[in-house]
Amino acid sequence: MKIFIAGHKGMVGSAIFKKLTNKTDIEIHTVEKKTLDLLDQSRVFQYFCYHNFDLVIDCAAKVGGIHSNNTYRADFIYENLQIQNNLIHASYLSKVKKFLFLGSSCIYPKFAEQPIKEEYLLASPLEYTNESYAIAKIAGIKMCESYYKQYGCNFISVMPTNLYGQNDNFHPQNSHVLPGLLHRFHLAKINNEPFVEIWGTGKAKREFMHVDDMADACLHVTDNLEAKDLYSQNISQINIGSGFETTIHELSEKIATTVGYKGSIKLDLSKPDGTMRKLLDCTRLKKLGYSAKIKLEDGLKDTYNWYLNNQDKLKL
Image (cartoon, rainbow, N blue to C red; front, side, top):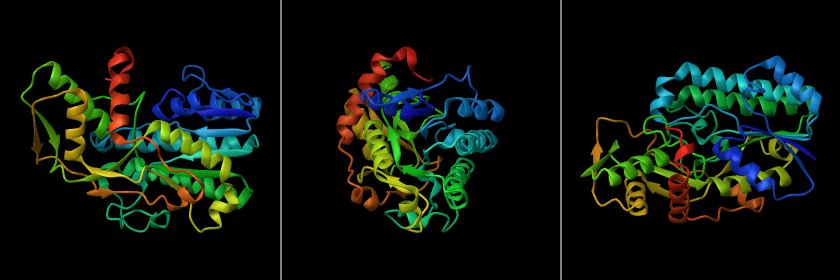
């Protein structure tokens, strides 16, 4: 089986690549941006038609936290739409047997009932701060569904919760909340700063999943779910989460413990909380036979060890 991983250098793509290297009956393909820019439609089409992949896993995306999503709105919607459009249509043209699209839990409405079921997609308005990214991802989900309904393509989508782990983006402004906090608490420790300030009230709840669990879940879904079985349930995607949620303040305390920071935590009430609660309903994932295994405390230790040992690779 020939498998192409788009975005293999990113956090999710690299975790999936690592899992697949343990298998002997597959041929893994990846490509560097300097060789193939996924924004270039004609080059992507040529590349796919030449290689004739059996499975394409789309982990490629422009990602970031609240600040970058809200600041670079045009970049987020344009680049993500262009990349996924090129990959999905190229997979159709080259007769790829299966396509896995990775979305994000930000596709769900800001005030969605909790825990969030797959059926809640497009039920009400999105969180404004990451609306551009979310709309792009929703378009990708609907493209996969539409290519199945019109052409019979075996294209499916999974929606991961908040992910963290090795190869994450630890930039203090443009990262997601967990890696951004880990980096800031680390700097506060080595600089002996008396406190670390976190955004908002600290009461917002988030679900976190280690990227190794996410990689296992993606491969499990790929092996056990066909497009016809997904869309026959009148849904467009499958949720992937850990089933465990924590407040941002609790997360900050756990990170402080992990890095050995002894100072205090202060709240910046001038900054937004974002969505106050986000927990995915993963009933369908469990029915497929998968549940997350890595506890948050263990995942934080693993992530911090990687952070310390890979300073040259950090995206700062």
